[in-house]
Length: 321
Ligand code: GLV
Ligand code: GLV
Image (cartoon, rainbow, N blue to C red; front, side, top):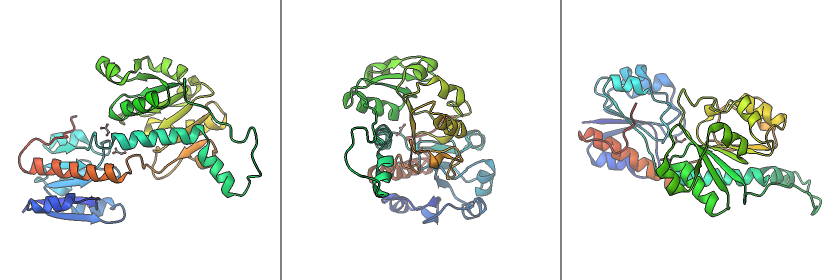
């Protein structure tokens, strides 16, 4: 009997689909992250692994699981937690869950942006502390989005959705930068390609939508933050290490930019020293894709990918090196 090991319980009925296929499904934990040693010993003998973005899956884990391992199905669109070279060397397929979470992440990006420009968490804290004494002409003044420029770094599915919502709903102009210019996407999403430096100089909002690779780590650091307008905002719903967090804390303290909205952090679950004290930073705990719709569809995709590989077919969401 084929064994599927999932490090965590997932929403929806993906596991029952796998069991109906005749696979034995084992769940590592219902509530908390598995320690690496526990993960390696419990997963031994699995033909398929279902992993979270918090599970580091490297050659050592793959070897501990055994030679029968055929697929690592990551319950995330990002796959920086998996050593793709180690998987390729062992003939193990790696899959992710693209597409189904783009809407959820795009909506969260817009929610974060509105929260920071209209200072919503900050004014809510003020109210709950019973500091509200009545209407004032300049109480919590924020910025308006209409007519302003959005600078997208990365124009994948999430970036395109964000562009679409903010162009059509909020009348923003959209610039984008990516490693490859994509003229087709420019037509489809109505966005204009510019160099990274020009994007940083001209954008009123810089929103990050790139995967984490060695080449994108610390893409935003002190010099990029200094290049941005003093009135600009930074939004990150991609991966924490894209931004050098200490540099961001320092830029916010020195008011080099107007504010930041972050769903992801460099060393999750820890935050850089000083970040929680900063009033004009809006922070959420990596919940960009946390809608019932997205998380259920992600589990369904994971099941489809596992079933495909264990039936000797090509999985729909193979990740390439
Ligand atoms: C979430 O961060 C994901 O990569 O799916
Ligand atoms: C997110 O859903 C993506 O497909 O990039």
